[in-house]
Image (cartoon, rainbow, N blue to C red; front, side, top):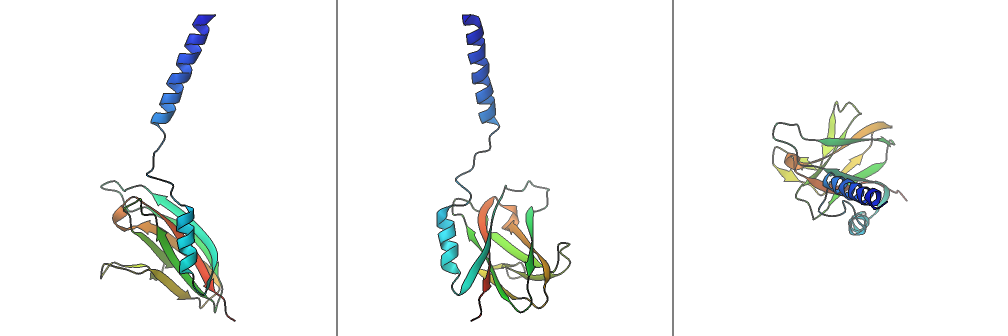
Length: 157
């Protein structure tokens, strides 16, 4: 009887340690309440519509920079504000880009100007045509990063 319980215990311990070996460890939680509070503080006159937490690992040498896409519907005549709140535990600088459709055919705006190597805190966009647009989230130079993308609109009185 003891042989079976020793084998079972040994098997359980090996299984647990193997599981821990394949568990990815991060520096901290990707998004947290401090990031959400910062996002709410930056809204000013705008109303929060949605938050998009995003995390990306550092790109490998010969890979393209990873990005995440989110299709959103925007209404004509409404002013929208997009910005990212960076998690300080990570080095990556978040970039938000908006395109005219999911195929990313035409760039409408971005929070990073590659020509001048300049970041902008936010992107305000007044929609001229109701339809689906594509938000793209990435990190400068493919660095590892974590951020909270914020999508908000201006409420007209």
